[in-house]
Amino acid sequence: MKLASLVTSVALFGMFTVSDVPFKAISSSLTRASAQEIKVAAGDASQQKIDQLLAVKGKPGSGETMRQLYVKDLSPIGIQPGGAGMVVNFYSKNDDTTISYCSTYDVIVAIKKGKHPKFAAAEVK
Image 1 (cartoon, rainbow, N blue to C red):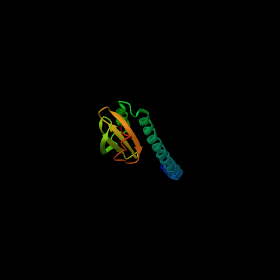
Image 2 (cartoon, rainbow, N blue to C red):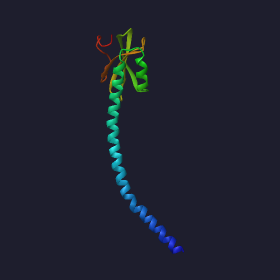
Image 3 (cartoon, one colour):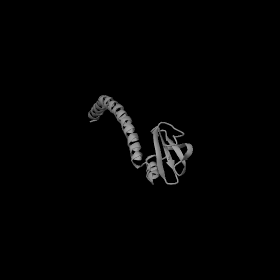
Image 4 (cartoon, rainbow, N blue to C red):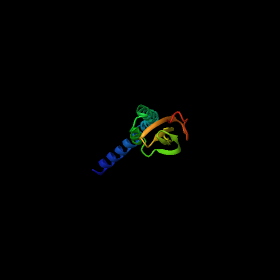
């Protein structure tokens, strides 16, 4: 009885040890593929956010859309005259995008790729 359980234990141990190798190889290749897909998806998501903001740019209440899309991602980098007085330029490090925002009317007045502390006066009217 003891010999049979010992043989069974050794056989099971050997089976798991041998069968583990292909699983590790498959899982590592899946991990690399998933990481590449995530990078592509992140780029698409960034462009989708910008497209959503461009669709509501200039409309009262568009600031709410900006706050929903860029939760804890925006840093103020500049203030300048424009809109209904002054506008604040926010920078998103994740999307490498600058958004000019007028808080008087809660409206986005300009969007540009890159870090721009100031926009041209014609862009933020």
